[in-house]
Amino acid sequence: MTEVKREVFGQMPQEERGGMVEKFILKSDSVKVEILSLGCIIAALEMKGRDGECSDVVLGFDTLEGYTRKHPFFGAVVGRVANRIAKGRFTVDGKEYQLFLNNGPNSLHGGARGFDKVLWSPQVLPNGVCFFRLSPDGEEGYPGDLKVWVTYTLSGGELAINYRAQTSKMTPINLTNHAYFNLAGQGSRDIYDHEISIEADSYLPVDNTKIPTGEVAAVQGTGFDLQQPVILGKHLQKFHLDGFDHNFCLPQVQARRLAASPTSPTPYSGQARSTTTPRGSCSTLLKPRGC
View (spheres, rainbow, N blue to C red):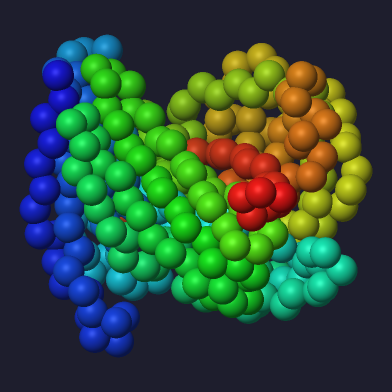
């Protein structure tokens, strides 16, 4: 049985177009999650550890002010395209589109005002909440009116996120949640004593702006070989790495991964409640219905 509550979290400043931000609290016997109507942000995720005590395992802020200032997309849904688009340019049906550049020479996570910075319309469900927004044709340079639904549901110990989108024109889309995890819980210093493994035999090297070079490289003998569990901090130190801002290719999904670009955040040391974890994603083209 999931309990769903809603409450006011704060008011957006006028320079951010105003509007009330709500917080939705989903609670089961073993998990409690707090989600904001701003950016569909997962602001807190409390769950029981081995000792039976509950801890918040995602990084976030206690007040709206933290989310209205610059931060590395804590807990938000990012889009239209999560990740970097090289030089902010892509071509669809023979037409080239130019996006806003907000990450050096590239466009990152939807541009200057991506999905993480806007208010979504919520609908409470028996075991969760569904958020909706219309991204108009031309927003941040992307083609087509894009309707997007993001649904969070909590069933026992499982939190599920479902993404659905419908477009009026062919457009690239790659939706993901950008939560940072520290499984040791709120108040823990960092995640360098965490154990990590990724069952991938290859990865995508990137250039100095974190765009994939096109090479698919074997992980063997490199710092990206995480097929056996390693202690994260010792492994990074051994190979002189500061994180994994790369896509890893699992053997059974390697063909799909070839089109992906990096989306993982690097470790963050700002004033918030936790730290970070690696993650990757893929993008695709969404066609209008009937095509």
